[in-house]
Image (cartoon, rainbow, N blue to C red):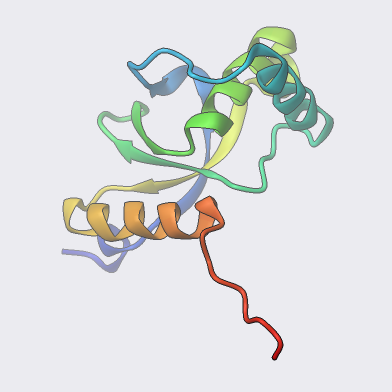
Length: 117
């Protein structure tokens, strides 16, 4: 197996090629604001999506649900600036569990801060 198959690959993917079956659980005003911020940044999100390759140019969303829904709305609002989004693509199932755990840990903000005594 090549080294690239064992790594997370940063890329730009078309929003329309990302599959996600669940309905949007987020408030419409939050999605609108997120979409506007993505468009303002030229289609870039600070927290890239994590997607699994399921076809030549097709992906399944694995992490970044809020960012995905914001990107989808950004695409609806302005196709030219919202057509693509930055994402990490993984192709190795063995990496899956560790990546999802890492995302949950870093994105939830549950890290305890040191308290002064």
